[in-house]
Image (cartoon, helix red, strand yellow):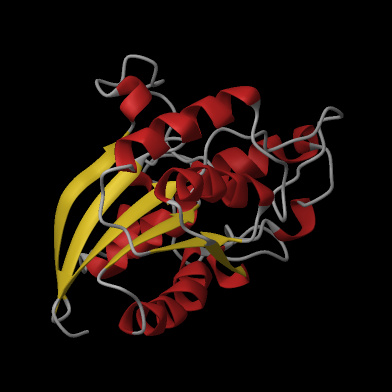
Length: 216
């Protein structure tokens, strides 16, 4: 990568991981809630003065809607990529969440996440890393100097860990709230984290549940 590039890495606004019947909907997933739209608008205003030249997004509805709200503020168009989707939960997709509570707790529990553990038929954190990072590096080489990427909690974590050369074991130690902003400067494969998990609508984390560690 020639020169310094700034990445504004954003997580999508609030959406529901299950539908009205309690069925898991991760990929492609559901759209933003009304609160999620409010969050995305707050983040868009925060980014309105940033010199962003391109906006890239996961093709999941919750990410696309968030990206479109930001793009409208910046007068840009959104480019979507399926490789920016959240990690697959495999056989859990389309099934009632209550049937998998113990499995979900076991895999997502703080300090118990094995990067190679996956939901049945789904992806591990290592799988997610291997899917996202190679095309991301290629995309950044061909991109403007300042870009905004709108993705998911898991995707954002592996991007941050890759850019900062952190082991995947740090996955559960990095929080990514709905519509949060991370700012990373990258130059010659060296990265500086300028801002982490900032949410304009709750900057001092009053609304954040300290017991929530991993969300999609």
